[in-house]
Image 1 (cartoon, rainbow over the protein chains, first blue to last red):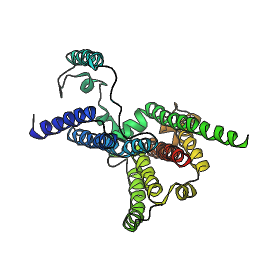
Image 2 (image 1 turned 120 degrees about the vertical axis):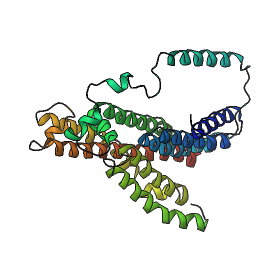
Image 3 (image 1 turned 180 degrees about the vertical axis):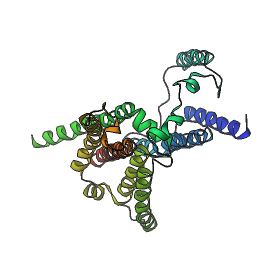
Image 4 (image 1 turned 90 degrees about the horizontal axis):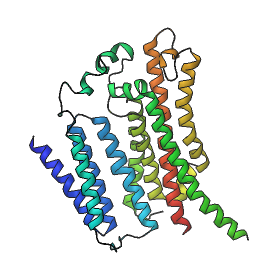
Length: 181
Length: 141
């Protein structure tokens, strides 16, 4: 493993632990943004610039803004937990152990015999120049080969937007009616 | 609206470039990293910056909530409509080969362009709508 991998993953873990232990929410939101940027850098090292781009713009950009907007509506300090953290910690540890156990069956990173490398028979990278012919194969996969998935994702975004509008709209209308009475 | 001159001047300088970069990411997604999703978020970021510096009311005059809500739905319709256009051309749903019967590869290019545009429109409008909703609640409080 190269030193930059070790550095980035250590920083990711440190940031996550700091955010969990923190009570001041402004600083926690800023650290979450830093966490997203570290994640984006990590994905860039894994040769996934499209994902890194999304992580940087959504995770560090929009999420941070929305979290800050939420803090402006609520409070900037987290309450001290009333219950002891023992049971949640146990649940997290057990879940984490199960997940790690699940990864044991996965093929090693970069394994040429992994299903991701051998199926479908002819790789999209090889098929793409004849069928779609755009230089960024990721775009070809997202928009054409997996167009259904992307349509679904867009619908999810649409649904999320409509949900937020419905929730916050309702309050506004009710208040207006209350004023008229 | 903030009275800080430096902030306002810097924001005014930056916003056109943010919008331009969003358009670059949108339409250059075939060649480099990026696409509708990232472009939509960056486009929305320009409006959010405008709203933070010049106030929610000015931002709502630029991006009218009615128009933004219309665009939220329009993007999905453009995406699904491209799929239906492919069906009318005699292929499967979202098989862009049908968009240009003489040159399937060109049809794919056209389909990807339209679909990414749909994604970009919906993402940008949704992000702006969500931010307006959050910020609007604060103004009422």
